Image: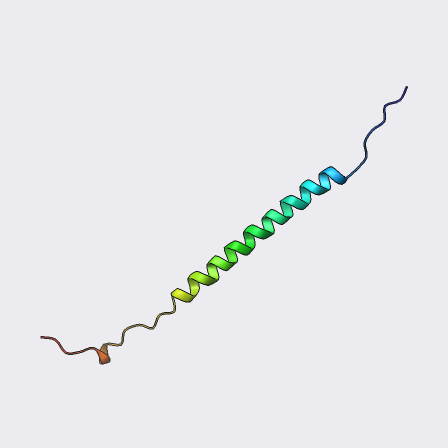
Length: 55
């Protein structure tokens, strides 16, 4: 008698697809967070010529 082997790629393909999808989602979240943080850093500096005089 011979053994039948399962040569289906469905299981490994599903696992690979889930891994690629998870990596893509993580990359998108990191990119979005980086863009959001970058907008806060562009606050105009205080100009000393506009400062009130103090003694």
